[in-house]
Amino acid sequence: MSINSRDQKFLQTRFESMLKTNDIYFFDAVDFEKIIHHYLDSGKNSLARKAIQIGLNQHPNSVILKLAAAELLIFEGALEKAAEILKELNAIEPANGEVYVQQATIFSKKGEHQKAINSLKTALVYADDDADILSMIGMEYLFLDEYEQARLNFAKCLDADYEDYSSLYNIIYCFDMKNQHTEAIDYLNNYIEKDPYSEVAWHQLGCQYFILQDYKAALKAFEYAILIDDCFVGAYLELAKTCERMGRYEEAIESYKATIELDDPTSFVFLRLGKCHEQLHRHSLAIHYYQKAVREDPLLDKGWLAIADLNIRQKAFAKAAQTLGRALEIDEHNPLYWRPYAHTQVKLHNYQEAVRAFRQCVALQDLSIDTWTGLCDALCALENLEEALQILQAAKQHFTDFADIEYRLGAIYYLLGNARDGQHYLQRALEIDFDYHIILPVLFPMIQSVEEVNQIIAKFKDTSL
Image 1: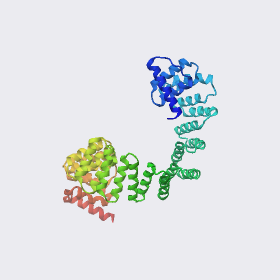
Image 2: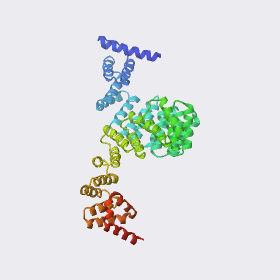
Image 3: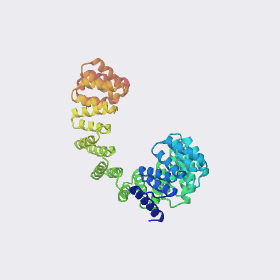
Image 4: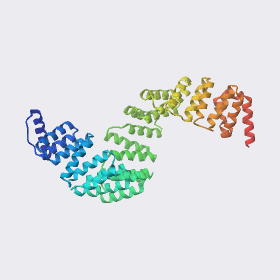
């Protein structure tokens, strides 16, 4: 423990002893300030408030303790009370930079970011160490979406401390927000020339190349970051993503696994491991990692859908339905689960359940054409043609001139004995997409026996040649 740490511990212990015994111990104002900020940093606001109260009783004219009182009031949202204290302090010490900093904090919390910037610029005039203030100015410009001004202020922070990686991240963020990725690369290369062993700079450089889809350059940058710091989890993760984009799935798997060895596993990493194994046709391993992903995060859409999608492609529809059913038990209001669940029920010929699922999609505002036509087809399978017709008419409010809908309308009207409307919609469907008429006997086998339908199709084919 350092001397400062021992002093801080002694002050804290002595102060808390005083509170327990109701004795009065004397502390100078600086000691009270240390005690107060310790409690503020620890989130012990009630003890900080007590220290301020006792401190001001012993040192009623102390500016630093009144500043601490204002800081606590700001933290608790009592902005007007804090502003009154700061106004008083500004009259006493107009050259106190910390007063302007706290005033800027109040402006910022009120959303008056330009006023906050003006106050911070005044603070700069009186500050001994301006790096923190420059960073605050940069953040205020970010609130105003003035990325160029923000970047310039963060750059000044780096001039003061070249290893201020928080400012470096913010500079790159400013470039990103303006889509200036080439400029970001130039900036990072200049930075690396001065500090070639900065793993953070190499990592950020790789991210910029990745955005520009220059995966070879990105790979090289991430490899350098790992050479400098072989425990850099973020670099392994980006390296893995880059290898995956390049189709180098074995290398991606090794890098993803490295992140698990270095840090707690995440659902994202398990999901990506599953995707890599799926690309290598290792379906059992893919399912294994997808299952790990949803165990790690049961609300992970992509995990459940990846399992179900793989099951569907293997024609294991019952397994897919079971997987999606489990997902719906966890999150029954997720439309991303209901639609594939409905389609698997169709594949299993569970049309009643499919109808229920498609109706849930509509209720959850999944109004894609796939949802409407799926619901229509399930109702037709149950021979609920009138209801299917109503669904298609509702779909037409969202999708006009879609062959998927017009062919179904034509067929259903014919099957219901309404040849006039059937002919109207069949004609419209043929005009929109003639080739799609092959779907009719697949969806409506009975339609092949309707001679008028065959004649209309044949006549349209002849006239369109």
